[in-house]
Amino acid sequence: MSFDVRLRVTDRIATIDLSGELDAATAGRFHDTIDEAAAAGAVELVIRAGQLSYLSSAGLRSLVFARQKMGDDVRIAVVGAPAPVARTIRLAGFDHSIHLVDA
Image 1: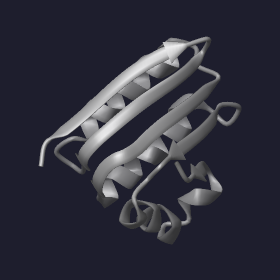
Image 2: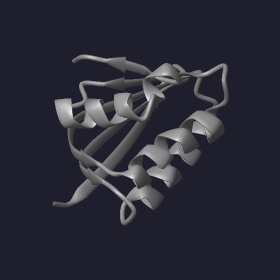
Image 3: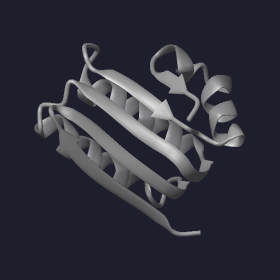
């Protein structure tokens, strides 16, 4: 399956829409988008994951990268993640570092 990532920043809230599979082959594109959100001075990062079909360990590392890049003062929410993706985030314990929000 293909991967798509889109960023928009409004009032210093960065929203990233993800679809497809976030894995080792696609994590670089997500990292680039995180860099753009940080450069825009976002105070909140919303990752809309409703169309994300798969999250690998490389995808989890990408979320860790986002947490580190954005800083501890920036709220990060992953919204609408499908059950398998949310389960992966919870099993890794990363739901303690970000907000995992149902759609």
